[in-house]
Image (tube, helix red, strand yellow):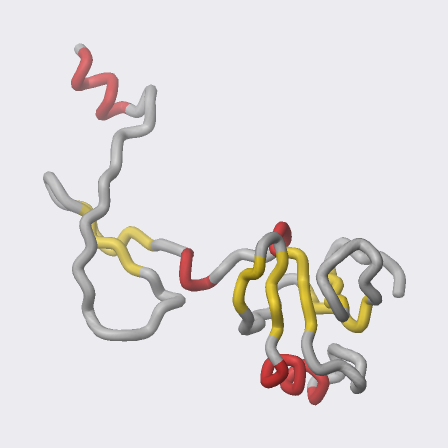
Length: 118
């Protein structure tokens, strides 16, 4: 298969000698788990992608390089800002309300940082 910057190659095993068995369009959502610098697609996800025509039929598991992927669970949104607190949300993680302790600092050179040092 030809290399295409708008697609992410899915291979049959992690490594340089892996055989390309399919590809995903930029922006596609897949389920898997990280294994080193690779995303492992388990059999259930492979079957789903095969039904969509994205992967070869003889495949049981697939692998993709993590360098071009962004985990949905790690995407953070600022839901609210207060005097000494911020409310954060992880839209990729479903579940109950949870409280975390988050440490943050102002970006060097920010307006608030400049006002503190004046």
